[in-house]
Length: 319
Ligand SMILES: Cc1cc2nc3c(=O)[nH]c(=O)nc-3n(C[C@H](O)[C@H](O)[C@H](O)COP(=O)(O)O)c2cc1C
Image (cartoon, rainbow, N blue to C red; front, side, top):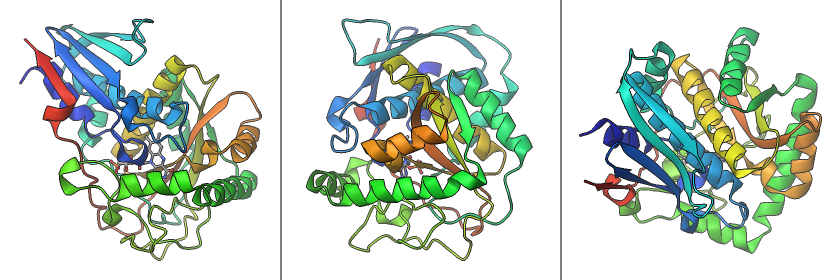
């Protein structure tokens, strides 16, 4: 298998909204092209495709990280062709270089990373760790705000309002059904074994199964040590959202490599009024992309892996 094929395969592990994996890869010679798949957009919550672009950005960063760890230089062009808006990025393979140590740590976390929706432990995430994560996010072209203790209630209220509004929307309920009741061969969507039963939480976690069939217990902890961070960018331009997704991947992989559990939360930014409230948490200096809960695992049992699409459906190689 060529390095580009391996990179596209590594990117299959990337997180995506509702586990839609809304991307395809085309390999031609020494180039790897990333395409968005708008048919996999979750229209009721993502009509503009912001979450789709964040998801594709995460896949792009996974591929880049694999190549940097495997010791390859690459050139990345984002949105290289205005005539083809679905072509999000072109990665051109360069020459062998010494493997980058941080990328090597992050690449080792790719297959291990999971969205863990259970409650995290009382052990706090340190300032040092949060500063390190912020630096990485900034180096990927996005920004990170750590929600202050006095802001957590506002985040919780914003999420609560968004979740309530969404569950009242028949189109959302249809999307929820579409992406949680998948045939097993689809290799996508959110299975009950990875979703958490609804419980009183510091900040609510999306209820993927309002019919009460989620399998995971939130556990005995209460997210007391969890840190909530808002990933944001200067605007909602597609290129910045793509870079936001790359920054999200860097954040999640580095946190995983450092022993943290992670869980993205996007409900609050999907509905206009709560989104406005979250914008307030970052003092209106940019557009919030999504929130991530970070913390230490209380329950040591690993969370089951969410399914992934067959690589043959996602990666095309032209020789
Ligand atoms: C843009 C984006 C938004 C997401 N929003 C949520 C969310 O609101 N709630 C949630 O529990 N998980 C959310 N996730 C996590 C995905 O559901 C998760 O990545 C997917 O189901 C695959 O599982 P994995 O991360 O364990 O590989 C989001 C992920 C991305 C990339």
